[in-house]
Image 1 (tube, rainbow, N blue to C red):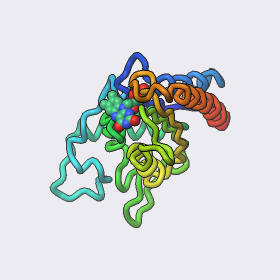
Image 2: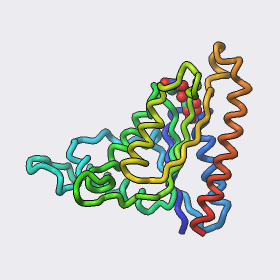
Image 3: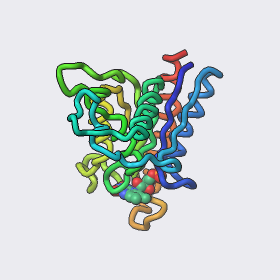
Length: 218
Ligand SMILES: Cc1cc2nc3c(=O)[nH]c(=O)nc-3n(C[C@H](O)[C@H](O)[C@H](O)COP(=O)(O)O)c2cc1C
C-alpha cells in the first residue's frame, strides 16, 4: 500500500498555513486510489519528549560502554524509525519559529537522525532511507528570498535539508509559503497580494507533488 507519513508541527490549530498545505497534499494522495494510505503524526498535539540521553543519537555499536539507554526511549525511537522506514513518502509541515524549526519537529529529527543507523558516520554504510522522497512545507511570516532583509537568515530549511537530505540521503523537496504575517502585521500589509500569490503557488505544488509522487507507488 503506498503510504504517506504526514507530520505537522504548527502550534496554530485554527489558521495554520502549513497545516492547510499538508492537508491539501494528504487529501490529494488519498484521492489517487483507495490503496493510498496516510499515517499521521501531529508533533504539536502529541509532542515527543526531548531525547533523554545523547546515546540515542548513536547506533548501539557506536555507544560507549557506560552509555545506557532507557528501554522506553529506545522503544519510542524504534517506533519512529519504523514509521519512517515504512513510508513511501514523508510530508513535513514545518513552520518557521525563531528562524529555525519548531522544537517539536526538532525533537523528531533528534530521534530519527541516528549515526550508524540512518546516517553513515564510519566505514559501515548506513543510509537505509536514501532516495526516499521527503516534502518539507515551510510557512514563514516574513520573506527570505534574495534581496530581502531576511536573506541568509533562514536557519530552518538548510538545517532540514542537511539532516534529512545530505546526512540521511533522502530526496528532499522544499515548498515555501512566505509573508504569512502580511494580514496580521500592519508593516507587512502591503505584501498581502504577494502572500496570497505565494500561497496559491504552494497549494498548487502540493497537488502536483502528491499526484506525481503518488503515481510512482501505484
Ligand atoms: C513562536 C513563533 C516564532 C516565529 N518566528 C518567526 C521567524 O523567525 N520568522 C518568520 O518569518 N516568522 C516567524 N513566525 C511566524 C510564523 O512563521 C508564521 O506565522 C507561519 O505562518 C507559521 O506557520 P503556520 O501558519 O503553519 O502556523 C513565528 C511564529 C511563532 C508562533
